[in-house]
Length: 129
Image (cartoon, rainbow, N blue to C red; front, side, top):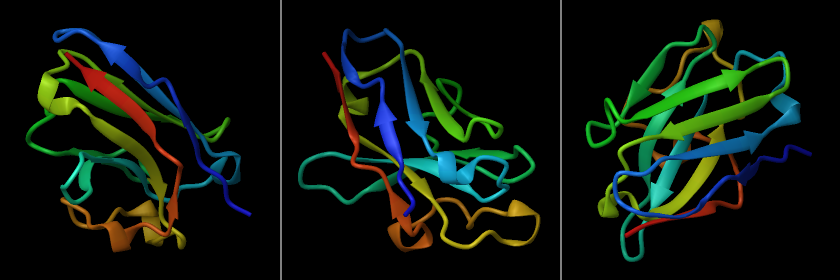
């Protein structure tokens, strides 16, 4: 049973920072693609960032230069460092992982869609005021 458990969300003032974590022990020592999505009320889920098996990263234009995705593959933990937060970053943030590892740990083409990722965490709320 694959579990993805996010933590680190909260409320912060504009310009502040948060570090989101995702515990994914099933993905320890795995090269499978993982990432972060977010969703605001009334909108579809949006791919925020992905990281492939070689550490290659991709980001939504709206977060480039402010957010950094990283991973501790030994622990199986995924991170999203969010700096320079803006009110429009307010959303529920979800940790995601593919069900099947691709050759070389490649990620789906960015921006990803929900169907690209078979495993989802329960989400952690980020509120920026």
